[in-house]
Picture 1 (tube, rainbow, N blue to C red):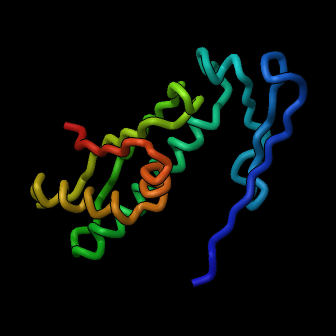
Picture 2 (cartoon, helix red, strand yellow):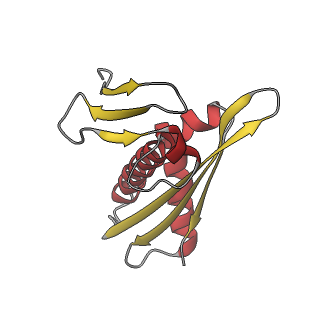
Picture 3 (spheres, rainbow, N blue to C red):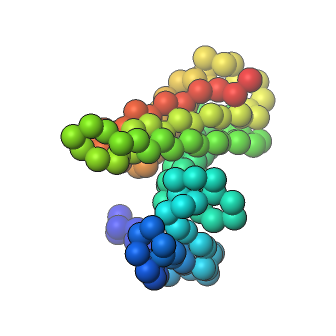
Length: 148
């Protein structure tokens, strides 16, 4: 299989503390001009995004696709999957700022599937999701829980 490649851009103007940037998709027209700045990255986001929020969205989307694939291949395709992802960025002594955790919370509408079978499918999805692997390889804890 050929490698899948996508691109995005950031145009930043000014210093880190006083400047701001705009994020845009370069491979598609999915988003353009998303505002990003240090004050909203480390404080209240308001109407701006952050690299961590975008990573959370990417991990949630990738994991949802992996779980849908696992369930579909097991002949129990989901009616609906709601995947919420929380990315944690922390100042690690001696290493600087690092992504330390990605927490996935999953609500699944999969008729007739037991909680144990859903947990097994979630674990399999975690093993096949490239973002889970990337984050884990970078030293982050990756966890998934079933939302009640």
